[in-house]
Image (tube, rainbow, N blue to C red; front, side):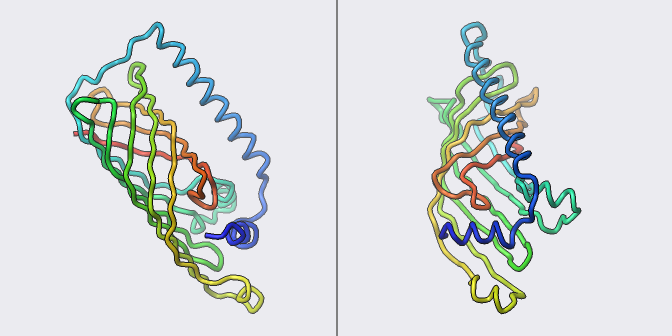
Length: 222
């Protein structure tokens, strides 16, 4: 999707004016805390042994359903415009290899949907998923993920005035994307359930025209 369309959508009809500087400061503080914590845990490996899995659960299913958290999210919360949320949902399956239990292979599909202003849009993506567990500290597991995907992108405009009708046209296209992501996973005591927090990075646009996005998932192992 051409970058000028994304920029035009973002600037003109998708979001309203908010204090983006404050949001960027909060994001910077969070990332600083994240990498500082990761550095500490890597140093701690010299003193703490990895905690091996106490179960033989090789399969896992993960799911996600939440509004996308960006500048527009906080604006919609403050103005109670909840119908303008950009929703993100995903489903994944992973299998732990017999001879390499830290390595997990599978697939992931995700869907984003929004209905804002004069447009309705969605993006459907599917692709393989590779995850490698780096190390564990008690019930925390630190991992890395990589996933290439094929996406179908669709936007339809409605109720355009004469000036807008000359600027915006319906969009329907396929595109390739990928991401790499550091992951922190908190496991339950029986290790069947876990909660993942990750931050996806890509050279392609992932969601809402952004190259890096947060992601939250709940997983069940069996």
